[in-house]
Length: 350
Image (tube, rainbow, N blue to C red):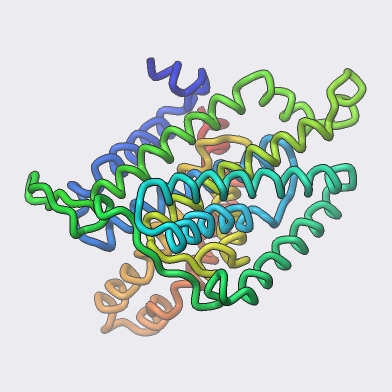
């Protein structure tokens, strides 16, 4: 059964299997293992970014396409839910319409970009996607009456997904709508991640990998490279938009900085590289490590600074205000010691 769910793509490393199991159990029971609003938000963010990074790896790792427009698709999904909720009111129909509209808009835009751009060289395609993503971000900021501009949009979601909806207590944890919201995010991300696993391990996924290795050879043996690349771009965009919709449902707020920022694109690239390109499990490891570091590295450094207060130089090095520097150091070290990513290293050392 497990092999079927994983589409025959086993971890192929005991250490990797243990890490994946720990992440799965930790996320599945996060509300009960790690109580608190911040811990639950971190767990939900990890789920969403695992899906977002996995959808990007379908492009970068499996097809060999470098794109800087992935956060644009992520933002389209988020704004789809936000606009539908603002204009249709709080209701499940608004969430459904917004999610479908965001995914459809992302798919159509990805199809147009792929249709006109995937025939050029990789670097030119990357520059085109960067230009389009920047234009969309500026447009969203300028259309204040529709999108809220830089202030973004705040909206209401169904009461069943908010803390106001309470229905009991279990193991000392309050059972409310926030918990239901988290498990909506968790199970949807899990299902879509397994779908991506099935795609990359299907004959379609094998063709994508062949195109990545040598697109001229793939074209010579009869595969229409542009068609496959466009299809992969559309699939990746649709999944990214669904991740954006989940993020919008979880946050109940959408703004350019939370969904369309180029910083998010850089973070996604870092997560792919840390975890390992060309393997969906790399998205799980990379997103988990990166989001945890973003949320807790500063706190850990604060504790280290207090513990070494009597020592020379060390408290200044581990000052919490320098957490971004140490995050960069960790990234450099991970690339140096794991050039194929953590998953690639673990599988190679098997």
